[in-house]
Image 1 (spheres, rainbow, N blue to C red):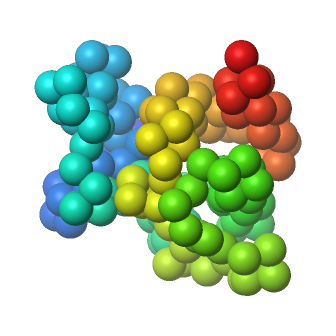
Image 2: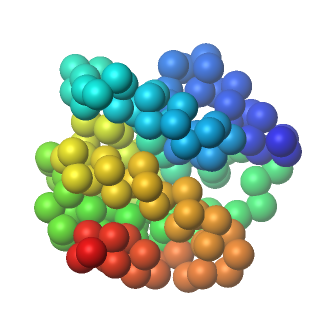
Image 3: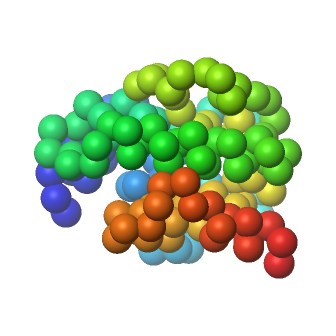
Length: 145
């Protein structure tokens, strides 16, 4: 585990957040249990942060440019909102993305959460390997299956 992920894990423990980057290190069945529980949808009473811009831009050792981080958050949030996978407007099209911009479980519909649980980490890995951060075709294929 590199320094970025160690810091991310430490932050999640301190703030009691369940974050997608941390979940990549857990077996899939543990991730499902953390997010869904025992045959029950996660309580919508408590919000869990899935990902937040500041976790990436303020972490020492993270080499991803701020513009790339912001572009991928914009792409994911726009995709979720345009496909009615959110319960509220997370970010308007003309809103600036800052370090406080984040995606929470209570922002998402059940279908939106399912899409992110299944595909967000796969998509992030592809972005890390050179996929354009605005290419959300993986998510589009997922909802049109």
